[in-house]
Length: 279
Image (cartoon, rainbow, N blue to C red; front, side):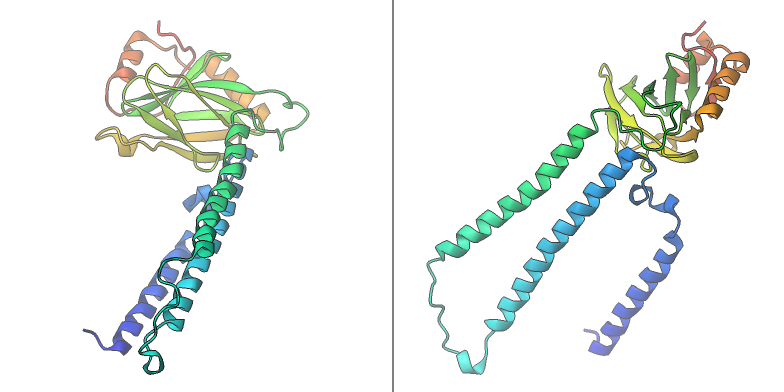
């Protein structure tokens, strides 16, 4: 057994090393969940903080009671013959510690359900200009092995492993999968949603301002899972319209050969097509 001084020194060294390591995580890109960049992510961020504070209060109460009991009722020379006055149970205390967890669960469930139902609908446009108020776009997302396909049905364009969206505009991602089940996740913009074969699930996301955000599959689906990432580029509405026109005029059409390559299990880079139906 180590001497007490060495154990304390080791603990202080471990805490110091941890604090030193965390100083390298001061950029929001290393903790995007705690640095929301859109109304959806912000709603979930506030829910996380609320849940954390509530759980912290529970943990503090438990530890305070725990140490109070072990100190107050510890064995001492002056109470060697101590016998608890009640050994059959205490109805008031048992009722109290049954009701309190129920209240904690209710306090967690009500805001969680409220936020969950709120996110079923398009987020409120907070950063949009009058030009884009009331507008939204729909993008079909298909998880392949091991790549992400994004189809713009209204614009008739398709991208692979990256998606451009207008900032300040709600985006309706329609999710499905052509292979194994996966999870579509852009931590800076909102929570994750499953992609499943023969199922169409929906996820509303929105970016406050132009920027580039990392997205990825969060469901392990084989050896290419680690490479199943994509980039979300939020552009100003004007730049997004320019990008759409540029793709429609300059990108190649989606061919049968390209479609077959995408459907095959394997890795590909970022691809852009000026149609969503193979020719």
